Length: 222
Image (tube, rainbow, N blue to C red; front, side, top):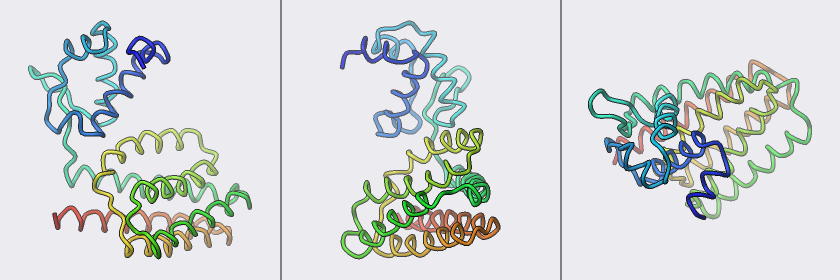
């Protein structure tokens, strides 16, 4: 696809932000690397104004920081950064689960059950299908987030999810974690079946905190 088609298919700021964000996630731009506006503008064949707007958006999302006299720098995620992200995720997804309890349909619960069966198969047969594992996990969470019927909350969590894409290379599934996720997901499903807002919120928060504890151990052991 040519740069011209790429840019014309969406509003400039959004499309440029998507491109740079994807490159950061893929590691094209490394932690601490400068994103030079003239170079980006030349590569994309556009003026610097939309580049600057896209960089401001990425700064608000936490992907870069704009440093005086240095410009835009790819921001490294520290343990504290990830800790903060997981704290926000746990609380907001817990709220989404609470709000979803009385709105989630039988069909949506059935989807959750089927996804969890896939998790069980991964745990038992092939625990190293990382991409499939992560996709199923995102799908599982998105079901009850959407069921919350809270557009503002869905939008905030969607923005937060972009930051979590940077952690993909760290999130390696194994049989132990996959099996634990099956049990934790079952508790979430049971909470929705029982129509318990308190239990739904707690189950989701506990699951996310457990996921972070697992990831933190992996990071520290490397």
